[in-house]
Image (cartoon, rainbow, N blue to C red):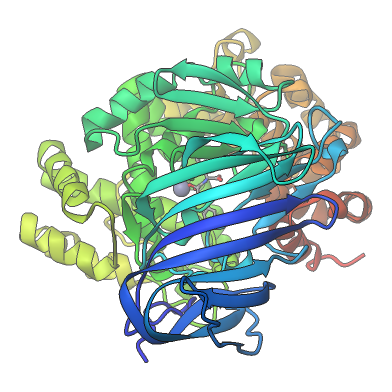
Length: 593
Ligand code: BES
Ligand code: ZN
């Protein structure tokens, strides 16, 4: 047996799955997908083939010749799910698995019409990263192995579907009032990049290769917000090489989506909270676009190397931002990241093994290990390499790295070996071993400072001592400047000070969710009653975990806000994604009702 990933039953000694042909029917009433997954091997295979599955009902398995394939579902393991072992007869090239998903599949959120902008039709979306593809498809669910796929997805009219794949047309479905949508993803991808969404969707072109999909009520605002996407793609191409996935489309989801964005290839999934009205939150798009190279093309081999995906991408995102908006904007973005990093160290403790870049997650659920550390510590490691080697040399290294490992999955050790090969001596001189295997933050971490940043944080820290920014100046601050300022305002504050902040920044009426949530976090921590209504609205609609965690944490400080938190959660729980529920319940456990 040669298992290759602590989070998968996939076995490298067994036949290799190369392609997936899916034929799935979406049943909104029963909240299940049912149909068939045909797995094609890279050559004739025989003997055991271990797949991952979680909550799947397996109806039967046959070869393409029609012979029944014996299969066995092992007992449920809490993190991994159930191993599905097929016993392939000799000479097997393809097997068809007939199955259906469970209504509790973690990767799928089924939304009631009331949870959508239109309010008239249900909505379904998937989120497979890190290890939830197995709740949708029986596959070897490890990023160490890549598959291409085709899919036929049948939906009730008038709904339509998008996937992390190219659209290949649609046709009348097998039953009246249904339609079947066809997709093809010719490039091999790790299973966590499989993605599907279905609902009442409209689309607008942003450029010949970029389009935004959203509910009809949202699509015009989305098209305005993201009209700079083509310029962003071109900037990224200058840094990392030609865009390798043909199309770059975006899907704006309903607000319960638990992440800011997800880099599903050819179809980035986005929270609608990035539509601020002034393009101020499109750094999320820069991030997901950058994953087209770092993550989707060069992929972490397992979640123990997740920093390779997120650290490289966060560094890349800030390089794109710098190219588009200048150095000062990039410094503020690094500063906002530093706040997140500090909070993550506080949450885990600086000595926790979860603060390592290269982790050992055997027996640990990747959703529990998730934090800003791989993003912010990882991107700082990249920035340190960049500063030490010099930008020009490092940019050449990054381009070579992407070219060398494209369409493969790699470990931290492979990254270091390539670094040693191309920039000899660099890893030793920056102490790469400690960066990867040590906890906390190494002493040589790069620092990002500017006079403007010092001014903003200094002013904020002196807030309690009475320092106030000039309202006329505040009116000219960029959203990032305001966010940096608000993040550094000490809390809790007296009610009068909250009211002053509100009259300076008007955060209760903010369209920018970063500013809104930061303001509401101050209000929550300060038991400031005027904020409670907006806190309730946000927590009842938005499922983005990045916002839920700090808000529910901040509500833990006073008896009255604690009661508010429990009351809100009781109402919000049925609307939250399973992942969002987990995060909130962890916060609420610190202050039980
Ligand atoms: N790939 C991540 C989201 C993710 C990570 C989902 C791990 C499941 C498991 C995505 O690229 C991401 O990092 N999103 C961020 C965007 C931000 C850093 C700009 C988010 O959702 O906040
Ligand atoms: Zn990311």
